[in-house]
Image 1 (cartoon, rainbow, N blue to C red):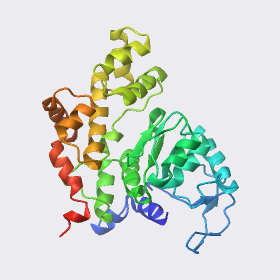
Image 2 (cartoon, rainbow, N blue to C red; image 1 turned 60 degrees about the vertical axis):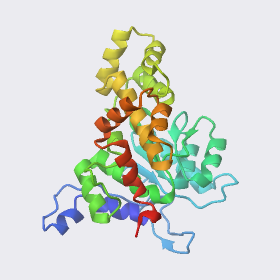
Image 3 (spheres, rainbow, N blue to C red; image 1 turned 90 degrees about the vertical axis):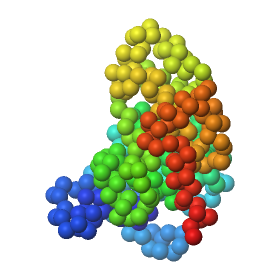
Image 4 (cartoon, one colour; image 1 turned 135 degrees about the vertical axis):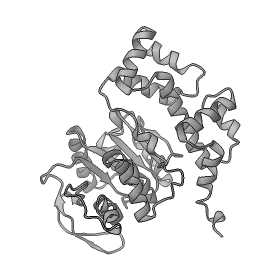
Length: 321
């Protein structure tokens, strides 16, 4: 939890200090720790924690991060976390970007913001999340899942996935260069190719076109089909030309480009988390020709699929000598 606060507080400050540059006047993030009543409490390790404010104190947050929680997962959430869920529903309705790390996704689930969306959480509570909230599509294999209209809900996996979440949020809200700098200052990860692992997830244009959002959701579930764009057009009820024009106006991409982005993102996850042959991954994400997949991957990621896999394999203990 304190790492979340410390890293966000350092954006626009620590890199500049290390390079002898005066930080800018604008504050990038002003993180604070909030609880229902703002009173001190003791965490699971016996440390006394003093919050900065209560939930409903001003100003209302633009960004909410729910950290991992330590409760009896076999029973219902305790009253204080249900109160937190109600507050999260209010802030989300007010426009806040709503996120969670690890088991904090259970609080987001109780708030209703995950309904009908993809989400991830710690593998140990994935079944709990899925069983309690049947409309949530739990992506157990994913480290980071942006979801919902405008990607205003973001869930991260296990507790250490806070770094993935923060780099994504910093890239999205403060710019890719700020995220690169923080990654280097805090040694959160290595990005030898000059691009953050989740940078492509920040590239989507936000919009409020519900028809296009529905088509995007369809693509997220049916990207492996042979003709997903045809399915998107049919689902829209528009002519093909009208749908293509409307989709590009909302997203900045053609439907085919969007499907390709989704396929490549899914392939990245499989490259990171499985030992499946690259040709098999190509087929699994919807490419009938491995060569087409390899070209699309390099075009979207900037490196080959095999290099991408090696980069992530280098993080395993077996790779450290």
